[in-house]
Image 1 (cartoon, rainbow, N blue to C red):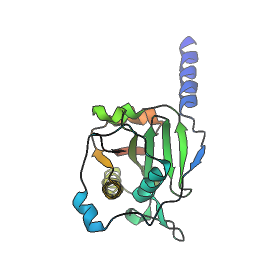
Image 2 (cartoon, one colour):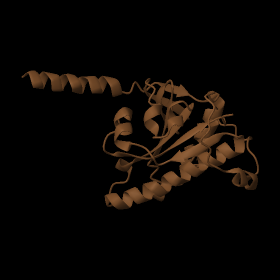
Image 3 (cartoon, rainbow, N blue to C red):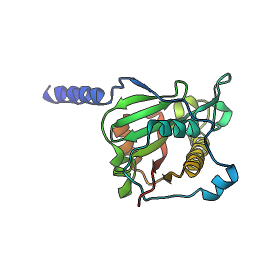
Image 4 (cartoon, one colour):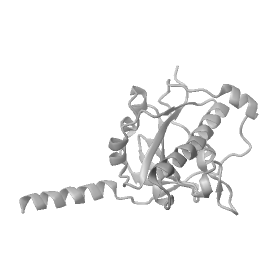
Length: 212
């Protein structure tokens, strides 16, 4: 009986920790007039692991998330990054010192997951804990029913790659530092994010102003 009570308490505690309040933080509209010529941006695209702790302005974050996986054709609900059969299974989560958020492309808003700082869990490199922003690219396998798991995972990895490249190109255009990272304790991070088995963490991206 005692063990049963303890188990119930732990379940309730976990529910309270990860219960999404679904608070939506509306982002400014993306500044579509910004940016540099594509060939220059491709020339400057690179990985950088030296980050300032200076926070990104909200407008910069809004531009970055829209570039990563925002809606660019509202009439057809199509994205800046392609997905196989337009299943749009890729989700972008935002980890900052203020908490964890999911980017809602339809609303162009951040949906609050919780207010805990879990940046340290988003990678195995020391800089992730202090960099202002870590983006976590997640595949929702629940949107990919009807095929074998391995085939769905391979497709999701490719689709996540498009989002990753969009992040790189935006950062190169705006003089921001970024690096994509596969070295992630996915089981631990998924627990900190409250993800269920249908969601798979693919990679994470650290973004910020270049460090000195």
